[in-house]
Every structure is written in C-alpha cells, then in structure tokens.
Length: 257
Image (cartoon, rainbow, N blue to C red; front, side, top):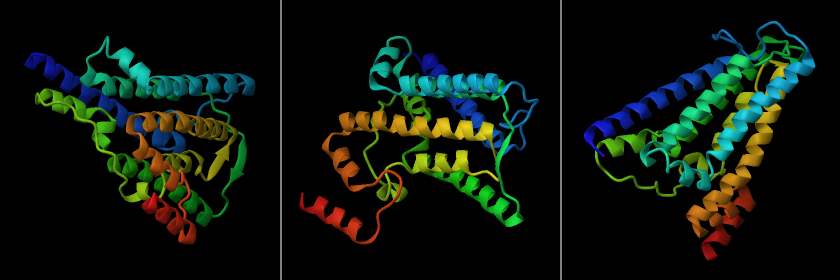
C-alpha cells in the first residue's frame, strides 16, 4: 500500500476509536441518568408493550452485530472487502453505531422496582457502578486496550511493520478470573440506586447476552490458542475467584499435568 493509503487507514482507525470512546462515555451517562440528553429512564413514557418490543429489538441488533462480527469466519470474510489492518476498527465502529442507535431510540419504562432510600445505600450503589466502569477499562488495558480497539493495528500498518498477534498472558485480575471485563459490565449495568423496569430490562438482556457470548468467545480462544488456553480455562474460574485449598489444589494439579 502507498503511504497515502496507510495514512488513510491510520486516520480511519483514530476516528473509529474516538467514536468508540465518546460512545463509552455516553453509555456511562445513559446508565447513570446523568449528563446526557437521553438516558435510560428519561423521556416521556408511552405504551409499555411498545417500549419492551422496541428495546428488545435494539438490544438484539447490538447483540447480533457484536457476536457475528466477532467470529473468526466473519473476520475472514470481511477482509475480502476491507483491508485487514482496519478490520478491527470497522468492528469497533459498527459496535459504536449499534449503541448510538440504541441510545437514540430507547423507550423509557421508568416504573420503579427498587430504590435506595438512604444516602449511604445510594452512595454504595453509585460506587459499585463506578467500580464496574473502572474494572471494564482496567481489564481492557491488561489485555492491550489499543489492540482491542484497533489502534495498534493501524499504527503498525502506518509504520510499515507487520501485525503480530498478542502473546497469551494472564496479568493481574486474569490470574484469578477468566472474565474480569464482563464482571465489570455486570456491575455497571446492575449497580444503580434507582432500578426501574427499563433499566432491569436492559441489564437482564445484556447479562444474558454476555453469558451466551462467553461460550462462543471461549470456543474461539480454544481454537486459536489450543492447549494453553484450555489449561487456563480448567484452572481459572469465570467470574468468582477460588481461594484457599481449592485454588491451591487446582494450581498443584496444573503443575503436575
């Protein structure tokens, strides 16, 4: 590719990343009902049935896009039409656009289910929400944030250097649980001082999607990484770390395998 084409790919990757990061910040305000023009509970409520159907469809669009484009077969197919260095950026852009559509068309169902009454309980719920967001971001940096969101690929391409897959490592949180990023998302979508029907619908479908997506994600990782990942999966729990005897026993079994 010419230098101009490499520059265009770099610019495209940077724009896709900027859109993602803005969408991520908006998502925080959307779920927290603060700082954004349309949040999960704002707006004039209409028919509950209509709202449920619309919201389920919006979440379904995001879920299908996110899952289909993440599969190995789809990645091979799409690189027939877009340059391989921008494949990940294209995925990130499509995910961001699906979320933007959700934010724009979401139908509020503000009927309360649970409300934190005291200042302490509200502070705890808000704090857990913040911990969830921080965990999500921290987990992405542990596994290479800029590779995950496509910037590393376009920067290497711009420099004329070949892309190399990241070595499989289990730093920090990943030594204790396989999916700290998803644990962060669980906290983010559920931790709120004011749980409404609409918020619970969003959180419930998002949680179900994560649990289904993990099955496909781990299958792909087993295919790509082989025995190394399968051994990691056997000794490391998904969400809740093992401590004490069970954890030591699992480590000892792995060491003697």
